[in-house]
Image 1 (cartoon, rainbow, N blue to C red):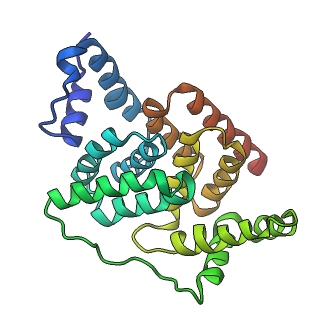
Image 2 (image 1 turned 135 degrees about the horizontal axis):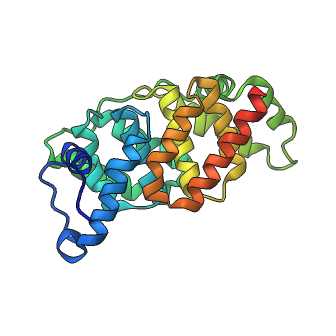
Length: 254
């Protein structure tokens, strides 16, 4: 087997002059993987290059694939993703993977950007403050999930657990979803990608499948995102995510 023309072209566009050490030690493996990830997968996804890289970065964070993430920061910038957008993907991840895991990716992002001559800190993107974060967070929840779902979540909260609902409203949505730098459609697609990559979060994945459909990321967009994720998350999580997309889409539109 040899590398296809498409695999070579797409790899060189993403990572020009990148030489993997595995080409020397594991040449057959690299041929299998590159032909799959950089040819077959891309031919079967309709995502634009920017969205593809946002999904890839989000997936690598959720997978804790720090070495690959470091390489893909440069690849994302080669395909037009801005430093602000890259930082926002990392910030967005904190609510889903936790601060301890996200710290490593934030540090690596800062290292790569600094090496590329980009001055830090970047321009701030926050749109909320302590006085309005709960209000704006609630509105973001309504815009994404719908008022009925969010209100029912609070009504049905178990006694003694209401503060977690407040955390979601103020921290997850009020502090992060309201930021500039990425649109709501971007953020929901990123969140979907992270949750699908984590695995074992099917209830939350169903909710954010609904959220994606509500903000305009249609079924084909979600299937294309999962297609991009497949080489990095493996087939069990890929098939689980596809199944949830189909179930949720059918329940809404049939």
